[in-house]
Image (cartoon, rainbow, N blue to C red; front, side, top):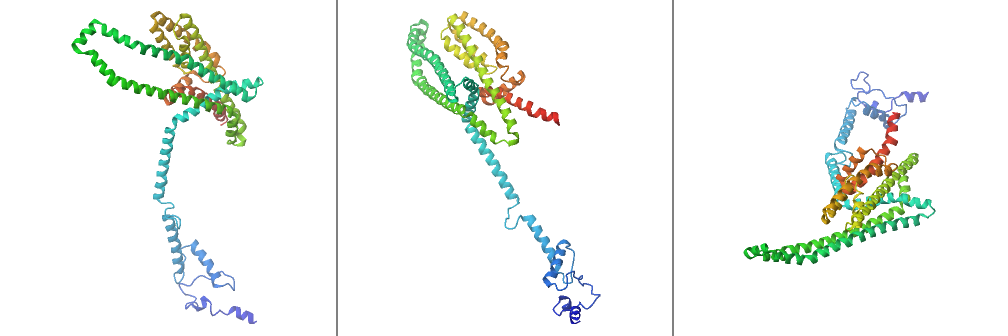
Length: 428
């Protein structure tokens, strides 16, 4: 009985009992009755009010405290949205956005400059990889014959070095011989000019020979000296580039399987088998293109050497090697080689020049319509129009190297479109 009386009697320390308007039931600002269970502390009783203040910011009390709390919450949220996260004044500000954007632009410019500065090295690496892929079918053929891969690579690489040496031995001696003969014949040319009656009378009147000697001594000799030095540097640079290319090609040829396995590991496991099959087809196409192009060039060089030897053209072997080398260039290579050889033959005699011109016109027709289709029918599957466009674009971008790489790259793109893009379009 005493417990019931105590429960019904208001506590003296209760906020409702101490409030001056608590005894007035019609008080206009009386707070709503609390839903807290009996015996709850004032802090527990205030918690639901705080939550209600957050959820309904317009709820008011007699002393206006909930209004102040809700206003503080709104002001804090607005300040956070306007100035970023607390403690990070530039978290989402325009200054940080512009700074990050500017750093991104500067990084892109720096990367582009590095690529341009190292473009020659990139081209050298790409050409070495291209040659390694092209020589890989020969290595695999030797492997099928029973040789180990190292032995097969050694034989193929030795053959490449022998080819470079034979080319140098065939081209360098005739060129050096012609230069030596020209230098030895210069004094005779000068003496003949000085004994000519017309030139002698002009020299008596205008002192042509002393002026010519002064020009040769003061201007032409330093220019020739600098030209010889520059030519020597070009030769050394070409020799260094050739050695570097051979070393890179040997490295790529020896580690081609390792490189392919490593790159396949970057592909998701669900697509790895399909990617491996496509990559093998692409590499086979590139290897077939390189091997076929080399075979066509060898045929052109051998046929040209036989024809020039029969006609008695000087330096027939060197000119045949020039024909074989220029025939590697798509579209215009065979024409360049024919023009060069015809010009050299014209310097020897007019009938030789005409015979060479007729021979190369006939041979190019045979090569374009008989030899090339038969050799390339299993290497690259690219339409003639795409071949021409790819060669033109590659030549415009990277010169001769771009023209050489453009056709197998176009074949690889065509294979990817045929095997991946078109089936997906057919299923959609």
